[in-house]
Image: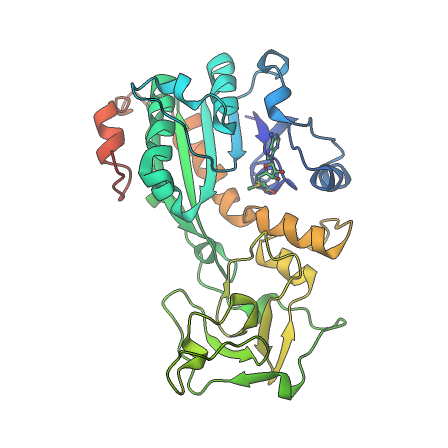
Length: 350
Ligand SMILES: C[S@@+](CC[C@H](N)C(=O)[O-])C[C@H]1O[C@@H](n2cnc3c(N)ncnc32)[C@H](O)[C@@H]1O
């Protein structure tokens, strides 16, 4: 069966690709950024609606799944818990009012790793309480892209909610063997190599549990004042754009703020910058995805996106665990108490 979804805060359609790969159909999208909309149009032949705060929920078609990787904002809670009303003035409120009107069977929300700590835990609490108030049974987990077949250490919070009382089981997501940066690098191309005098390699670089192998650093912009001798390279003052990672490991998070694309890898005895195509590969985008506009904008777009293979796996499980689950043995909907103390393996501040 084909399930219909809406793609909110759509960016360049990372969510869309993952759900379309599971035979789901996109029937509405919204995105405010002009460049992202242009890229979305180039790739999907559909121009997303604009600012979600200006869209009346009644014009949105009925759908089975609501997808949203929304910006994180604090709620200004005056005192008394008002749930849904507490979310007014934030972009989550726009998600909530659509849910209230359309009652999709499933919601999938994506946010940053530290979402559970945002505003001392208040943000996630208000969101989960609001979803509960709207009838959704929720579960959430922090997932890492490196477990889904891309060599990037990118942790993101995923919240899944269902209307039929099924608590999404994140443990059923199929993990893939780890791959290394070298497996996604382009064989040929115009590469921006660093001269040997522009960087320093460190001795015996170690693979970290995240899979990263920090193996060197660019010589410029290194502030060594106040650091112990021979530990300069380990100092926190080394900004991420100065770091060089071995291609036999994973890559750190591609960040939306890094418009200059200063991602350096050490591969076949040379240090070079990743190409924009390689950055898209690190997010699991295929090479036929059309890239338009300036490099700076493309770096912003890809850093804001979701990792497609991870979303694909979530979409598959959303279908089998929630949408195609007509067993009588569904567990009862969450109580508010459950939400606060037991979300997957995590605790949240209540
Ligand atoms: C974290 S990104 C999500 C990217 C998307 N998941 C993807 O795969 O590319 C958040 C997106 O929300 C968009 N956005 C922010 N405010 C918005 C608004 N009021 N209406 C619609 N989109 C908005 C931003 O432009 C940005 O592209």
